[in-house]
Every structure is written in structure tokens, then in C-alpha cells.
Image 1 (tube, rainbow, N blue to C red):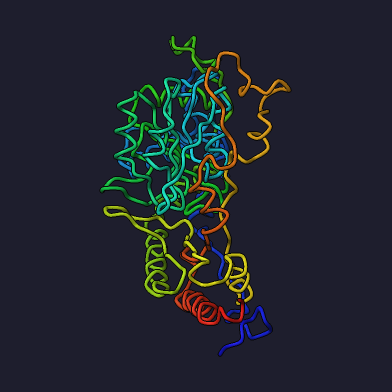
Image 2 (cartoon, helix red, strand yellow; image 1 turned 30 degrees about the vertical axis):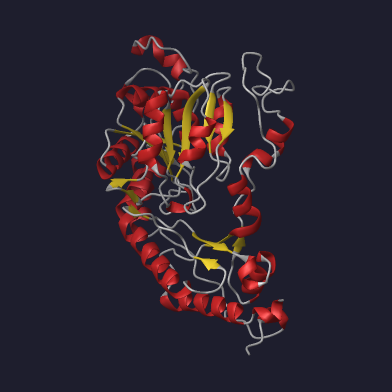
Length: 424
């Protein structure tokens, strides 16, 4: 019997795993070209040729739209800004309900609050961890105006069914594809499956430019409204001839020329960075399948998973060891394994105390809202079970990982799994 590292034995892995590095000479050259041009940004918050930004920003938007096969791409300074702009473009206002996921980065829900909307949390699917269509149906009321769907961990949500629900109820759907660039759903690119889709170019995403994002849509109207919100729309509407002033209070969500230049080079690498993630994940799934208490990631039919991170489910009853102890043993073997993902969003202080803007608790206390707020523990039982009991994850699948790194992961899992009696 091998002595586990947590009990003083030799760890499987004693060196850190490789970092994920995507920046190379191409990006350096692109940045120097921008610096040599002396044009670091060309946005003007007025109705003029520079309202749409500089040459690199507009080039990136054309390339992004062409790559993903969609009519419009609007660059922004972060995916968070993109979500906010998309909610604004959808016309959300005080008291409108927006169905959101409880198990994602908090901005996917906060976006509704920015315009006075009320986040309504639907539960997740226990296999993909994306919003459950059945739970969405249960949460719809006459006040529902939109759904924000997240392709969490790189697996697209069940968008055909969700879009059908949305069409039945005349709802706008925003797809948060921050973790799923390069993923596919029934032959279509993740991020292009809803009325608007939001991509992230944050530093730890599959491709990045430090900070940044892109919103895509096939709607001319949504594209115009996204561009206005991005760049001081209230100043522009008069000269541009815009008559619908709903949510036309603009912000500065503009991307710089340097960020756009880097993003253009990163976009060229997307497929070469996604393919190794899939290969690594499929290797891990083959090798870890059959270990007691572990369920590797599910991939639904006609889906290409983007594997932002590798996520497993853990069954303590099958091993006789708690998830906490099992994960701690893996970490002792040199495997950086995480438990859960993020605490269900509705359990955060903002929702528990119902205070967002101002001391009065807006929008939760908005007099025009006639719905019933529910942010109590137990609201989304699948989410809570996944987070507090079952989900394990690791950043195991990026392009920097070599086969030996993956074999070390497998070896450590097998070692701990074989010797759980030492833990019990």
C-alpha cells in the first residue's frame, strides 16, 4: 500500500504545473505597430467617424464577426461591460425580472441590477451545470423580460430548448460565453446562439488581451444600442437620429487599440488553443472513468466542450471519505484541486440584505415591483448540492500541459482512490 502524502508519504508531484501562456512574438509585433502609429485610442463620445473607435478596434470587430459567422461584433473593455450593455440594449428597466444562473461569476446576475432589474435565480442542470430549461420555465412570470444564460466551464447550455421557451414568452436571451469560445452546439458557435452573446478576453480565459470583451448579435437594432451604451450614448442620440431613448445613458466601455491588436492575434490562435484542451480532457476522462465516486465531465450529443476548466462530480457515499478530505489528499499529492466553484450568488450579502443602490435597497425595494423576492437558502437545490457537496475542479486542460503532467494527475487520483482507507 502506497502511503499517501497527506500522511507523510512521497507526493506524486513536487513541482508546479506549467503556466498557460498564449502571448508570443505576434502579439509583441502588433503592440509595437500600435505604439509606432501613436494612436492608442481613437474613440470620441460624439457622433463622428471616430464614434466607432480606431482602426484596430474596427478591424477586430470585423474579424470577430467573420470568425463566428455573425452579423455584428461590438468590442468592449470587459465581458462585464458587455453584459451590462447587453441588458441595457434589451430594454430592461426597474422592476423587470431577468432569469439568471446562481452558479457563475457574479456579473452575470449583477447586470440586471444595473438597470433596476430583479435577478431571478433558476437552478442548474446537474450534468452540465448550465441553467436548466425546466427550472427556467418554473421561474417565468408576467414580469420576466430576459434570460441570461451562461455556458459555464465551457459546455454550452441547452440553447434550442431555452430559445424556444424565450420565443413562447417574448423574452430576450443573452448568452454569456465567457468560458466557451471555440465550443459548439449543434454545429453552431457558442456565443452566437441567443439574441446577444458575450465573450471575455480577460487574462485567464482561453484567449485574452489582458482585459476586454466582445458582444455579438445578428440584430441591427441591438448592435446600434450596444454601440451607443458603450460610448456616451446620451450625447450621440440627437445627431444620430435615435428616437428610442430607453437606457441610452451611455458609459465608457471602450476598448483600446493595443487591446484590440492583441485580441486580433489571439483570435487567430483560438482553434490551436481549444483543441489541446479537448485532447487533454478526453485523456483524463478515459483514465479517470471507473474510479469510485468520481464522475468525469458530461458532454451532451452534438456539443463540443471548450473545457475552460475540468469539472468532476464526487460521491462521498461511494468512497466513505468526505469531499473535503479527498480533495485535501489530492492537493497533498501536488494536484491543485478545487472544491465547489463559487458560492450560489443569491447567498451573497447583497441579496441576503437586499441592498444594491443607495441606502433604500433599490432595486429590491422598488415600489413598482409587484413580485416576490426569494433569495433564501434552498432556492436552487441542485446548485447548492453541487457547490457544497459534489463538485471538484482543476485547471488541467490548457495548452501548456504536457502528457506527463496529465499522467501525474491520473496517477495521483488513482493513488488516493486506491488508498481511501488511509483517509477514513
